[in-house]
Length: 244
Length: 349
Image 1: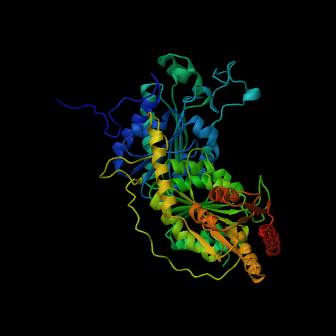
Image 2 (image 1 turned 90 degrees about the vertical axis):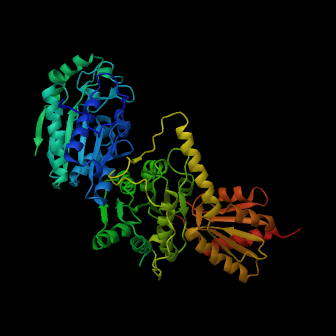
Image 3 (image 1 turned 180 degrees about the vertical axis):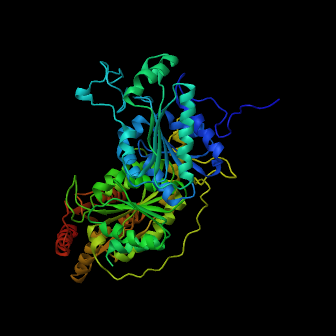
């Protein structure tokens, strides 16, 4: 019998704590497969955020650190500068990266830190109960926008990738989605490219934004959540390569 | 060399691999010096976008087993408290220099000792301590650097050097000689890539029932060991003294001059100078309280260290305070006048 598919050893063989239909499981697997395929498991250090993925070190079998909310790009800076031969990546949600950690991601990019950032955008704070995130789209109902997000008073969705793409310190920025098989395959290719740039010592930061479903706090079935990414969320956050 | 430059050079000689910092007065000579010297040494220097980022860069470098430090002054150190708490929770070594200035708020840029509570009580959230060193000369500041890195590595915790604007700015002759290093445990916990070994995880999150209490109990046991073994303090002219002045850092330099002047007037006064502020020299002061009549705490705050003196004296003798705040520096005459005043009060009836 011929093996046509195997589970990557970089993804630990254990159940995750994620809700049914959550995108983190898919995103973890893509990162794990890329690390495996590039043969960098032994020299990769990952950074887990504060948010739903805080326990990522329980699932990804590489050296990992869990850090303060939003500070991952600063921690990554400290790691990469002192260990240029290691592959450093942060895995951050939208509350972590686009709210409390805005200064850290902008300045890590501005300095051209040679790190890889996986940015999971699911348009809500998941861990704390589905509050509005900077990436919540207009009209979206969350725990703290019961009438739907209004631009007057609650502001507009923050286009992080577009902001980062204009900085000279980024070498690669792409927005992907987990809403269909082709999209997932493209997301994996983007993540792989982002890691390859770092391995090849490209002079700057690479970031992949991943539009990821949160059926629990979108109040949708998992399949409806996938449709919502395709039909609604991607209108606010257009999918595609922004730089590099 | 001014104190700030001297501590920077001492950090290099102590094997500091990386420095991360954000500009703030009165410690800017540290980063200006290290920007040049770290490059010469082929080591890491990064000017961060904030103190929040600086302490987290330290966190990152330290998590990979490197010797890392930052320096700042009071308002910047307040911003670092989150990171210091995470360092404590993740059991990571780090050296943080606070060249204190007047507060609260933006305060001023004059020398101060008003961050004593923040430094010695932990400062950030949670049940933790940092080792705190309070040097009183540029030479001692220099000597504190290798000690701070060694203590941080030995006990896997942040070590803070509590200096002040005078110490940072003043120039004194120094001897830079790398002190013999301690025998330090290997950093087998460090994140270096899992090649050839199981995964290493550095974290402060402990969700399982009882797991966080277990971590805290381990930290507390370590803190007790430090209290037992790492107290440093200087005792000066304590024989036959009726009055004991307690002061640290630059205030101790002033207090010592006042003690000398009072001795010339025939007043039986001595000085206890804590060098480690945490662990505080409780036993030394407690022992002194068995014999001496009056304690006078002299500090550049409205009264912070005095509370530790009171705890150590435990009601066995009166404890008085001469404190100056908001960047005010006590003069020798001022402290001498206070000592004279106490002499009158302590005359046996």
